[in-house]
Length: 219
Image (cartoon, rainbow, N blue to C red):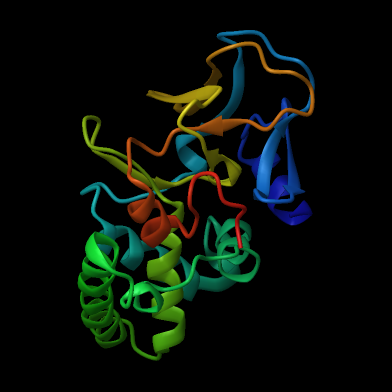
């Protein structure tokens, strides 16, 4: 984490008002470094620090992530890519949930079939790529990337991607010319977790997509 934050400083990511933490039932998260007022900017991730696909597609972003990964230290995003592959705890893959009843099982089965086919395509497109690495890259994008259909943005954002979901989120994010900004929706106390909304999703979709259920501690 220290290497990532040092790189973020070099990329002018403004994370001075947030700290990373690990909390029971929430896993890794962001908390306020001090009390903040409504409307205050909590985080700025400039465009130069973002990994984004111009087509705003999952396949495009996965290919881009794997390309940066293959560059190793030569990648402009090397510390962030290393963090994503080496330190990020990912949800269980979709095939683990296929036996669930109803909509959850149907979604998981369809997702698992698509994932398997796409991983094969990735291995064909990237010589020397292992199935494990390909599947990991896909899960990183599925569970960590931010998406805004209206603004045609799908991106992996350092520090930003540590924020957890809450239907009554105390912060929201905005896309501007300079990058992505996180803004307080209400007063936030020092040490309080900073959350955003991942969207109006039912619990079964949160489970398949992100590995958690509302009201249930994270695994």
